[in-house]
Length: 272
Image (cartoon, rainbow, N blue to C red; front, side, top):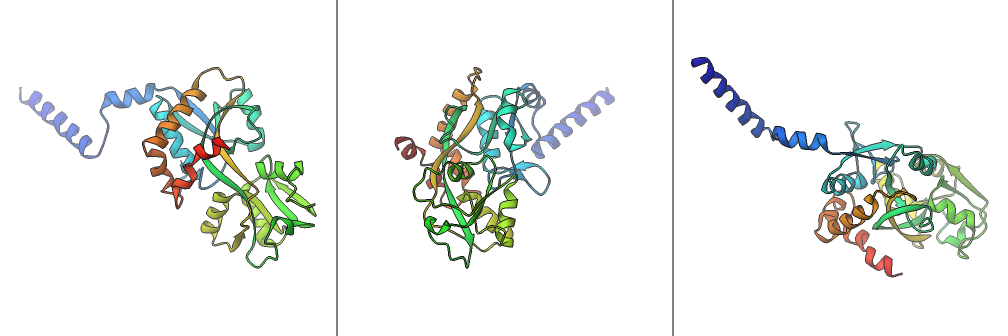
């Protein structure tokens, strides 16, 4: 009898300790374990997706993904991908979607989209003492961009009359390299998402200057394979709208960006 009492007391103490430590009930853990996993392909693109000091994925898109897919009943697995192979990876079902500050404009026919869930400006940045102040000043200059991004497409298509003939367009595989090229003087300017440039300047105390004239204002979204019939893109689009409406998205963005409201004005974008 004494032994049974001791066991009972011990179980109570263990449960109390688990509760105090913020541990979940066994049935809740079990429910999470039974949730299907959704695999998200992303690149290293702060502040949207990157590894924290413990080597764990974090950032705006990572937090939004965990919240949105959590509401939909999924566990999230972030997979670092070769950004140039995103369409191939989706087609082979190696990943379920691509979520990492991905511009929708000009790509509507290539993917099935959820979004836009945020607004972003594609901009040009130069060294602080550069004599480049307007897009027209890029004539004959060397501009570095990340491969398969919207800025690369803008410069290659040459359909924007504001943009003169460049001296050279330098295409690089990784985001960090374009800033290295600018800082070392191998390039006269870089083009990327404004938020990404601001984050790099903050992280590395870089002295760049962003041109006031943007290349393009775009909506960013989550891309699924064009032939995806799972219904997840449609459900995610609905969930992201709910998160904007209930203030969850703003709360997440505020951790990383000043004036988070301006990045959530997607309704204005959709009317354009």
